[in-house]
Length: 526
Image (cartoon, rainbow, N blue to C red; front, top):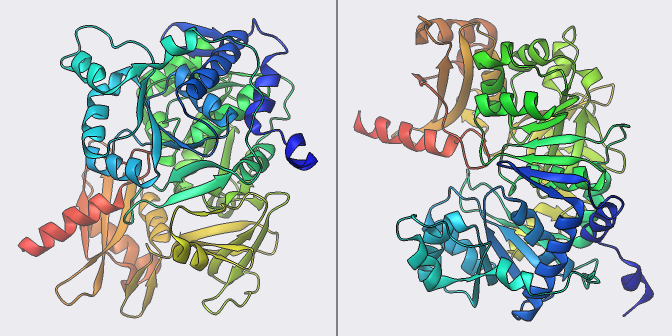
């Protein structure tokens, strides 16, 4: 083993060492349970030893079917400590989709939340795995749950309790695959994005908290998505994490007030729900220092509403699983007097290079629209078992993001659309996010989603799903008139559907795939 490999310290080693500075400090809160730094550290090392004793070690895949439990974070740390690849399933996928992923990533061990043992039994019937480990006993009274766990798994916490808590020296190497993170699947079959231990470590460096007071993070979205990475940064920086199982606006506002939360991550649709909830006007949210949002396009009009509601605490983070972090729009940049800034994704992060290129690969000048290409130490290694797709996306050290955008004269990056979401119509291109911004600017619109639907002649037509303000008398003609006046006939939707809420993916993004499928079905019946 080279001296360079011996000196390598993965993120998990750094985090565990940070926790040793004050073992009695409470770091994780979940449903009335409070876990100290020492308890968490010991659990990670015991779990790492238990995994090895069960025949699981470096270079194998551990797949998690888990909710937002302290043990979910602990087992991920344990698997990474011994150099495993970790794949975290989205809980709301179908059993068939989950089984396909489990099989595809060559799962050596499936680690299961006790609340999901019945689903684990369904998955393993379709995709058998060598080992199924459950994060604790199944609560009595759950119909069929006890039979399911008896059939498929053993209690990992019981195995870990019999192991010593002495520190396990990491065997992970810089170029080993650390995570296989799947896309949300909103544009087709999910792709497995492979990130190495060195790339994950580089990403963690971009999320350091420079504030004097340790952060208090509220997690109310799945740990399988960005919330898991933010959790790592908070634990490293001496903070604590409050875990909710899912997003509920009233519960989030109550937790912010009760726990004096300073940091929160939300996808834009959830941010809108939070500020629209009546409790947001009466709950004490003055402890908030940063509401980070990202993961999908946001509406400048609605972000302005959020600034008025919560104050100058909003932070937009633009990145991709394939690219890591790309740019940041700081609280200072969230200027109500600069609406163009609210449309921007901020300035490019230190250590990241961004080029805007046309279809031939030519760099475009300031202000011109093209594909956003990125080069940094955070780029993924590859798509899992898809070398041809990897070669199309990673070229000459640059990652082609599939996003359309432009850089302005001040260095601010604006993301206009996904190439796949852009609607090709007679006369040109309709950028869905630009149309959504316009629709959302109407005072009686809470949220919208724009997507293309092909007609019988295979021509794309612009469709919009709109969430109106409760009690509104808004009709489609008013919105069409607004669009025609502001953007012209090319942008005018062929169909506008009013809905009570937009469907969301498991990660919390508007599910345009589902909206498109419903629209196509309705169109075919006409």
